[in-house]
Length: 83
Image 1 (cartoon, rainbow, N blue to C red):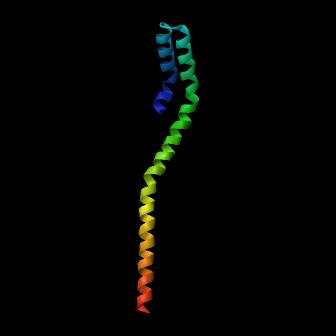
Image 2: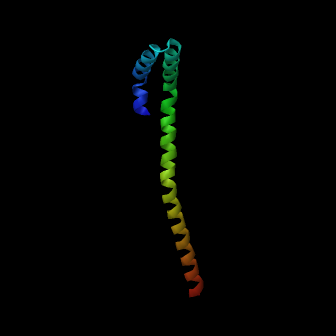
Image 3: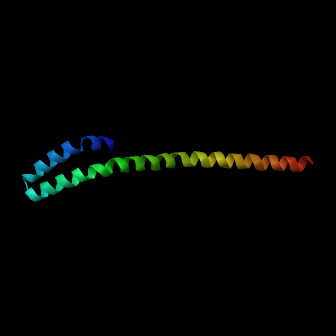
């Protein structure tokens, strides 16, 4: 998405010009749509990055927290039986 963000104007112009040969209104509409999409691409790319980072880290933290809880329960049980 970030690569598309950098080349968005070039792609919009080329695609709009190619489609304008078929239908002028359609080519102009495609050009405007892709040009207006540029401002949303960077925000969307960072949102996707944040979501995937959270999705990757969540299982690791879950396993780590369960491990800590089980170690606490084991120590608590050992202290109970040692008394």
